[in-house]
Length: 336
Image (cartoon, rainbow, N blue to C red; front, side, top):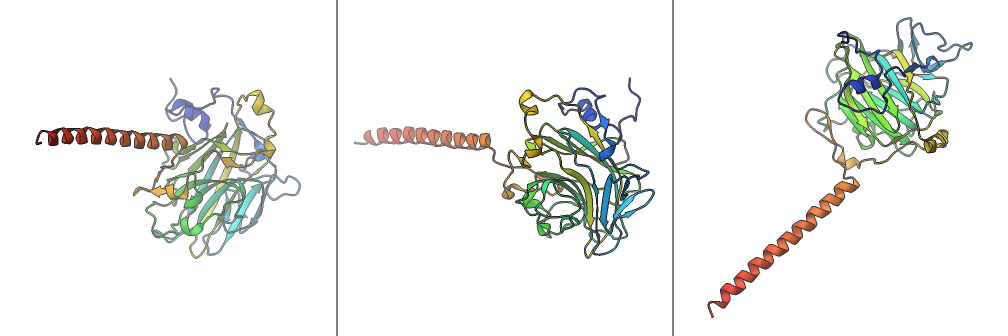
């Protein structure tokens, strides 16, 4: 019997999926491998160093012995840190140890952290301190509701995949381009907070450990995601009129040992365009009062079922109408 308390932020996410109710493609719990060239671990060697340039940072980012502070708790700050090495892994898992904290009270703090796997790096911009119309994957840890009409509960984690054609709308908290999301109370915690991002064979999973219980909680799980190899990992943060300390303590990347078909192996993965097989319409981005996303996209089979039900309804109504009409005709004949 396994000892209690052994599952935690250091446990690879794919192993947790095997132990839980979610079925994962990975079957070998010992197949994880930490890729140090893509990992940010204390002591932060090779950060901003010309001799070992593993990570570069810019803007307000400040490096200490205990954390990388992307922004201080001050207004109008932007900062980021980016891996210097492009990642050519087809299947990977990133564990992020982070902390968002500040003196601002409820709804008086902002704006949040973004985690990136993108084509371009070290380009400042309006999306949590990084560029808009990016190519790749972004996970937003948003702490401030810019849309006053939202029923979504903040802080909120959301996912976006972009081929450069989409713009992140801050005024709507990115709702129009969001693939999925969940409410996550990670701000001003007095214990460690973690997030895990796993990408394998088109499946993107995001999980959190925010309760100091050494266990992962599911946040996002979507399929049909296509990401190329050769992109860069990074993290950025921004503040506006409101602010917070946005700290990254570590980013650990694990390689997932996954068998691919010969057809998959023959693909030039560096040429893949970031995409999702089915991106729901913005009109389907509806919140429920708890702040969780209520998905309602009309996929092909749902449209078929709706049309089939409508057709059956019309047929039933026609048959019933014909029977009623025939009976009325027979009844009228008896009066003549």
